[in-house]
Image (cartoon, rainbow, N blue to C red; front, side):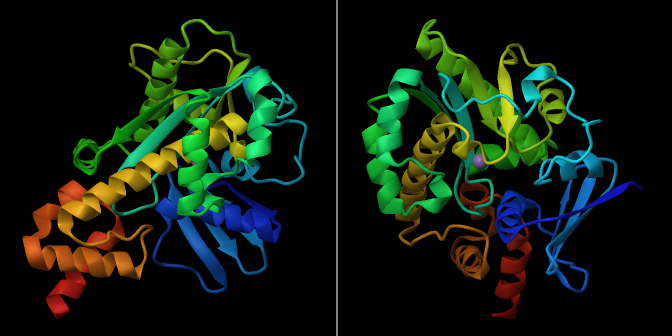
Length: 308
Ligand code: MN
């Protein structure tokens, strides 16, 4: 089994933890901060800020996080994935997803277009990754930017998500399908307006992304770039993440209202508690409509319920 070890800054460690949050494992080796398992790779981050990647995809995955690109014999093959293209000043379509690490609520993907002319206006607004903004700020920014730019949002309900999961689609594939579809629908809306490229906030290797899309009728692949932390590469991704987050919050509110309680975000202990409460009141089947039932929270909630 191949492996790779990299040493990271504190900031990269935090980004990593966030990046892998839906793939975290409960069993952790001593001295580790977290262990995550994705297709082809297990990632273990240590308190020493060393991170171990194990498995077939070890080197590819590690290369996403290397702060100083190591060898010239890089694994990056197609020209659209080289890291030296400065995209920040171009007319770009960005796409990002939210809700993937939240037990309750939908998965949302937004694609948004920001032209070079619009960029400076957007800079003034102070767009950032939605994860770094308060709910109120998201709301405010989303209302400001939505009338100004062309965007398209797709929402995958919990029920549909669970159905797809039941059909053995992993979350990565769902994301890829949604990004591709959102991009296609945005391009339709843009009606031929020219753009320099498409930037996807990278959640898997580009080769894996396109493998997920195999068999799709329309595959958006020309001028597609992938970057991790893409919201800091081009504001179109930051805008997409803000619009997607606003939709997520809106649906969470609707779901909460229908249950007459507040569904918590994330996947922590409060979530287990609320899930247990729902099982208690309505029976386990209710979770199909409100939660991503394959998350560990379901079993934790059931365990909690049985102890009551
Ligand atoms: Mn993202």
